[in-house]
Image (cartoon, rainbow, N blue to C red):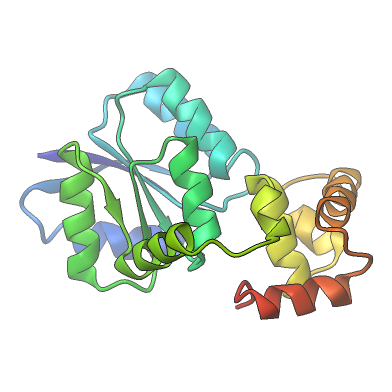
Length: 210
């Protein structure tokens, strides 16, 4: 039996996934977490066979949370279930220690395959993203400033290019406005971009906008 810790900040999604897994004889949701702090508390208290983790939650999340989890339970397999369908996010997650990455628009059967494979000690990457990563590795593009962004910076970047302002980003990521402004400044400096309009153009040109 795969004892699964389900971590996502959307209660409706967690409920839907729990109902899905109840139909599977070898998978059970042994714990639920709505944020990174809950995840860290639960893995201290219980044993799980797999952490099914949303990449973007409020508070501690993304690569920072992956690193914390691996520091506490290095052998706990982590499968990322994310809305982000760009290879850069997947690469950041895998480099941080995640064992698999699948997008939320994947078919149910693909998710179940990924869960069983990662829980069994294997690796899994969404096939479309795997192909993109392989292509970019074989034929690397020149000058990709977004590749230098940290996980949190990339989250802020993505929210900025979708039209969110500083206050909205701070509320969504459970950060203060000053911290978000600092991230925005770092993004602009790293990418040598002067304003959000140019960020949006860059995102569109590199297929980073959704």
